[in-house]
Structure formats: C-alpha cells, structure tokens
Length: 199
Image (tube, rainbow, N blue to C red; front, side, top):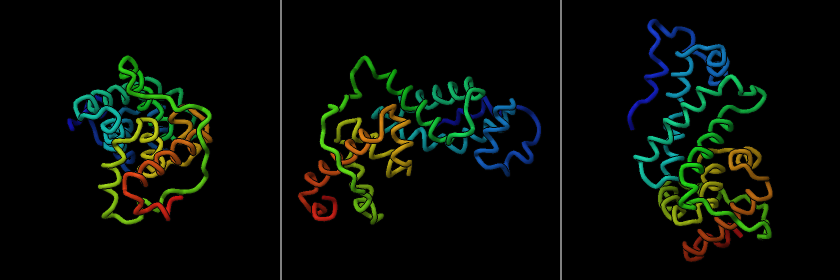
C-alpha cells in the first residue's frame, strides 16, 4: 500500500527522541502538535488498520482510501482523545465508523437481531495452531460482516470483549453473541472437525 504518512511526517529535522517513545508517548506529543510524532503513529498502526479495512471493504483500493481517511480524521481530532482510554481502541473505532459510513448505502454491514443466543466460551482454540490460521480466516470471510468484525477484532487484533464492543459501538453481550455465532458457523463449515473443542 502507498505510504500516506508522509504528509504528517514532513517537518524538517530529526525526529530524535520521538522514535524512542511508546505509542502512548507519541499520542501525547501528537496532541501537543508534534507532526513527526503523528507520522510515527501512522507508521506504527497503518498496516493493522489497512488489514482491518481491507477485510471490511473486500478490496485494497477502497481500503487504502479508507485508511487515509481514517488517519486524517484521527489527525483532525486527536486533541479530543482521552488518554485514559486505549489509543488503539479509539483508532479502530474511527476506522470502523469510517468504513460503515462509506458502505452504509450498500447495506454491507448487517445488524444482528438482539434476541440471539448468548455464549460465553472462548473460541481461541480455533486459532492455536499457526498453520490453521490462514485457512480459518479465509473461511471466516464468508461470515456475516458483523460476525467477522467481532471475530477479527477479538482474536486477530487481540482486543478485549470490552474494547471490541466500543469499536463496534455495541455492548459486550452482543459481541459475545457475534463471536459465538461466528464460531458455530466456522465449526459447521469445517465439517465438525473442531466441534468438540468449540461447543
């Protein structure tokens, strides 16, 4: 993908200590107006955001545009970010909303009925073996978009149930429902191979 961080990382001079900062430190410097720090934030997160948006959009072209739009929104609103929360959660929330708004007219993102069955078991066993991950995620692309988003954020990105709920602008029960349904669908598609492990 093209490197769109250049527009924020264009201030002359050595970034210096900013390169040694954690993402949280870069956020603090970005809030104070340091464009170099924001450029480093873009470099740190852009691949993850692009991969997330590529899976939502279904093609890299739209994902590139949405990634750039996401970081523009972050840049314009970083002064509003509350450092008491995780920056990655805030960032992915903006990315998801940007994609949602982009595809709203096509109804790409479907809602899950509120009365679906709830299950609290952890389906991480599906992803324990590295050689299984690619095929499982490829299969997961056939899930309903909301189920796929919940599964990806929870297990590919490692967000907690609470943070996943914030990103998807829903509650934790709904996230658990989405993950449960996604797991059951994957188990059926896998012909019951993992059914005894993910009930």
